[in-house]
Image 1 (tube, rainbow, N blue to C red):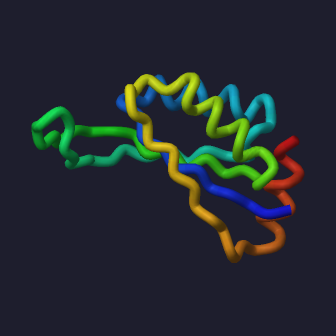
Image 2 (image 1 turned 90 degrees about the horizontal axis):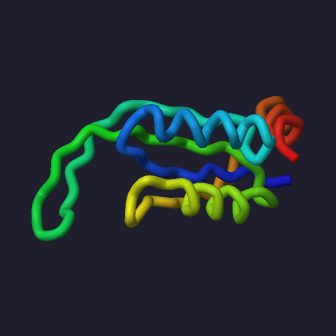
Length: 103
């Protein structure tokens, strides 16, 4: 089974914690790494500089479609980032844990 990482950003810690806990509980993801970041981007004609939370959703290839749908359905942004990182190399013990932790 192939691992996949889905990346998204969230406006506040509560919004990412809520969906992360749910996704781990129902075994769509094995893990979500969350870190506070600073983002500079153009939005509606302005340059924005805001704090956000970066989320790395770790899952398997078979769960990525449902994960992307869940993120899109629950995300607070009008235009959420939902980017996929194709994992081409991963250590075997971690991969085994990831597979065992998802459905």
